[in-house]
Each structure stands twice: as C-alpha cells, then as structure tokens.
Image (cartoon, rainbow, N blue to C red; front, side):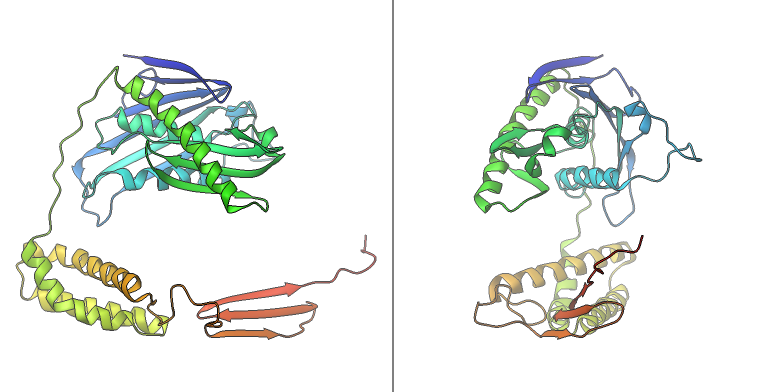
Length: 365
C-alpha cells in the first residue's frame, strides 16, 4: 500500500512516499524536493553473517540521465563512481552505521538512486533522509529516524538546504546529520569564520533535522512494521576472564613502545601468543571469541591510559602545554632544482614536505 506525505520545507515542496516503487525490497522511500527525486531501497539477509564485522553496504548512484544528459565522448557508458558520489555515500554510511543495534550481524544493503536532478537542489542530504525512512519502514532493526540538512550563510543570513546557486555566494557549506536529540555527523567547509558561527549553524541544522524527523514519524505511524527477530551472540564470561588475565598486562606493555612499527609488531606478537596458548586450553567452540576479546582489551587499555594519564602511546601528552615545545620536530630547508624552495617538517612520525615555485616574469606560450 502506498503512503504519501507532502509539506513545505525550507521554502520548497517536499514529498515523501513509500510503497510505490521497489516493492520487493525490505523497505523503500521515494523523496522529492523541488524537482530533485531520490529513491532509497534497503534489503537484509535472514541469516547471520560469519564475518567479524557488521556487513553493511551503501551505494549512492547519480546517473547522467537524472539531469537529462547523455555521457559525452567516445565512451557512452557510465564509468566508475565520481568523487562526489563516493563522498555522498560516505556521509550516509557514517551516519547510519552506528545506529544499528550492537551485535547485529545480518548483511544489510542500502542503495540510493538519484532519479531526477533539477540542477538546483543537491541530492546527498535527501539520500540520507530517504535511507532513514526506508530503514525504519522495514523489518531491519534500527535505532530511530535520523535526517540531514545542508546549512549555508549568504550575506549574513542563514539558509537551510541552499541551492547550488546560493552556495556560490555562501561563506559556509555544512552538512549536519542527527536524530531528534543529538548530532550524528558533521561535514563541510567554510571561509574564515568564528567557532560561534559553526555552533550556531549546527543549531539551525538541528531544528531542520527535527522537522524532517517529525515528517518521517507521521508517515511511519500510518504503516507500522514489526521488526525481525535476531539473536546476539554473547561472548562467554569465562572466555573474557581467561583472555583478560592472560593478555591485559602484556598488551599494556606492548602498546607503550615508542617506535610505531615496533609497537605494532609487539601488539600482534602478544595476540598471536595468547591465541596459540588459549586455543590449546579452551574448547573449539570458544576459539572464535578469542580475537574479539583481544581487540576489546587493546581498545580499553589504550583509552583508559589516554583518559587517566593524558599520555599517548608514544609518551607524548595528549594536550601538550604551550611551553612544552614541539615533540621531536625536525625543520629543514634546502633549495632544490627545479623547485626554487623546499621545506621538510617532521613531528613524531608525521612528515610534511612544502615545495615553492617562482613563476617566470613572462610565461612561455
């Protein structure tokens, strides 16, 4: 059954539909803003994956037909995803991935298609809104509806979901994603602005997010869906205690090696030794849990050390004092040809090379 809601958002018509397209998917949403139209579909496997991570796949597609164009040049087929498509996909992935319940291991695929592009309204934030609705309208367990907006500022006035033309005159381009009461993800760029301006922009974005979430909840209430049942596999307590007793002190010593490569090798050596020792002791059914517990221990001891002592694993301070001076910095300048100037800076293991070129007074050609 098709459900539809139409409202005015940011001065333009916004339509959210479900049940008209992609009927075989677990959930789908067709969203129209202005004349830009985006379709999001989600599917889920009924079986739990054996992979050691949550197998979530997100794809964002912008085909040239959406703008009424045909790819030019000798090759008429669409090629690999453009950088803009990859970045839009990452915005959606980063926003939704933490909101699946911990321990959920069923494979989930999310596909977002730009069906129509009006050359005025960007489709990336619409893709996240459509994805949120499709997930919540499906049987896939998901925390709560989320939404995303773009915030710009043109001649000192804040603009919600600015058009491409308005962005040319905006000193800020900020994408804010969040839930009803929190911010999930922020990405963007700006000219030289104050920190207070960014905070104000996030607040304006949050108000727009709440408005979009209210629309989703109103439409979701018309067709409630029962969520699928799934079982979270808990690590046995005796495995956690045994691995912790065997590995914790060794990992603490290993992660405090000052040299990065030595540190990595030391941690991996501890993990391998612990796995070998415990596999001979624990029953076969408990072997798959050992690696996960070791990873949790490494994360916990590293985090505890930073929070309690304020020291990084290389011995440097997390928040160095202003009078502490640079840490292991090596500044060198040397003239190289054909480059007119070259400067190398090193802080710890981080290296940056700056190269300067002086153009001739008269350019050839």
